[in-house]
Amino acid sequence: MEWVNETEVREFVFLGFSSLAGLQQLLFVVFLLLYLFTLGTNAIIISTIVLDRALHSPMYFFLAVLSCSETCYTFVIVPKMLADLLTTKKTISFLGCATQMFTFLFLGCSHSFLLAAMGYDRYVAICNPLRYTVLMGPGVCVGLVAAACACGFTVAQIITTLIFHLPFYSSNRLHHFFCDISPVLKLASHHTYFSQIVIFMLCALVLVIPLLLILVSYIRIISAILQSPSTLGRYKAFSTCASHLIVVIVHYGCASFIYLRPKSSYSSSQDVLISVSYTILTPLFNPMIYSLRNREFKSALRRIVGRTVSFPC
Image 1 (cartoon, one colour):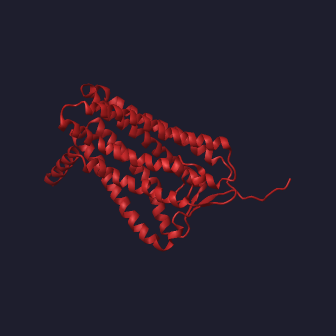
Image 2: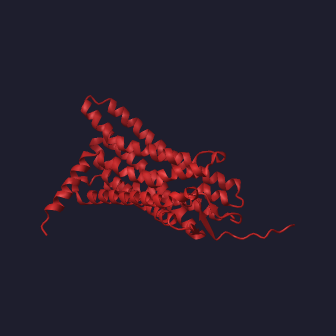
């Protein structure tokens, strides 16, 4: 038997923006401004919901959790990406890569189930308004968030363990700007068909099950809205659900393109572009979609600002 001298990979080198070497300083400035704006808008949303008692309802509780999740989600990826744009050595340790992947998957999977919980909240509010406070009490809301986090943790743990127990001996050049599933799997020296199937099935379940729950909720919601005799009531109900639907379409559209397409159609350049959209642009637009289109939230924000400005020194 012929033995090959193989060196185990100890670190990975990010090559996500290597083709844009002349634009990396400009990208740093643009991404930094977008990141700071995202942090600022999410901080405003969370503080407004906490400080204004009129927003102490299940819908805004889920919105605060969503904003907190997206803040953590960007924190896992963007600061490292910004640092790499200013350095020539764009590396991450093997353990650091595993930690980044686990945290990213945990938050991303939890996000999917959280959107399903928000869809259920809208279903109860529109289809069972008289029982809303009973069906969506504080214990139920906290339980739904805990269940979303537990599902996210379990899926992230299984996928990360499967991937980083594979042998990495060949290349450590990662054609991405963070440790995502497909780029890391591509560097494994060999992996079993079983591990690929398990990872694909878990990704599919995380996307398909919450999406089906959301679809069922909105089928019931649309049916109830169309039966309403009031045109104003129908408009108000549709406008309440529109923000959630926009976020659902963007989230599941990007995630399905990345994680549910055939391996033969994998393209690192396409993945980098789509990943920029859901790690930087989506967390930027989601707070604006939810807050700027919501009169109740804008009124609460004006009250908070008014109290802050008029507060005596």
